[in-house]
Image 1 (tube, rainbow, N blue to C red):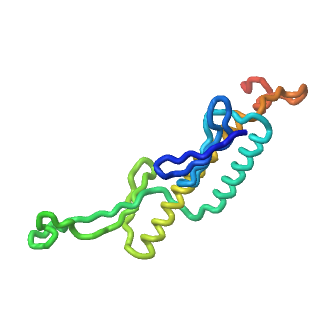
Image 2: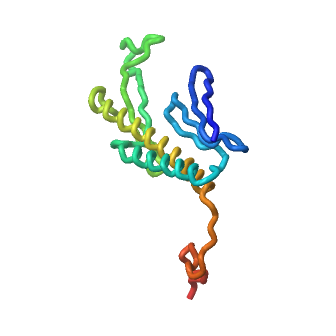
Image 3: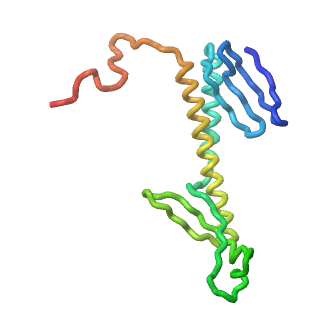
Length: 172
């Protein structure tokens, strides 16, 4: 198995497992991510490595804390009073006011947050959700590579239909 290191714009990436069709895996030090390419692993060592990586990702998912979907937005508003300082041209307005915005049941829901512990808690929870989504994406990529790498095996006689349907219609 061959490997290499590439540097692009000051970012160092380590590539592992080059095959005849291209790079199998790439680890990026800049984003601490593991990418899987289109190539299929050759042999049980490659499959074992992918399964090990999947187990690492599952363990990392278990360490994700409380999370919530949504985005935090800083909002400044003008009060509408003609003699207020915010009415002057170029004045940013009153604020900032922080909103947590998310979609729920097809509607946009907004929650106003107070600066301080409430805002910091929401920032942490939104960041944890992003971490969770990134991990799910990585697990999906590794699982797809495992599916591609796992050899096709024919069912043994008597094992039955692997779909669990028994090969029969379920009608009356």
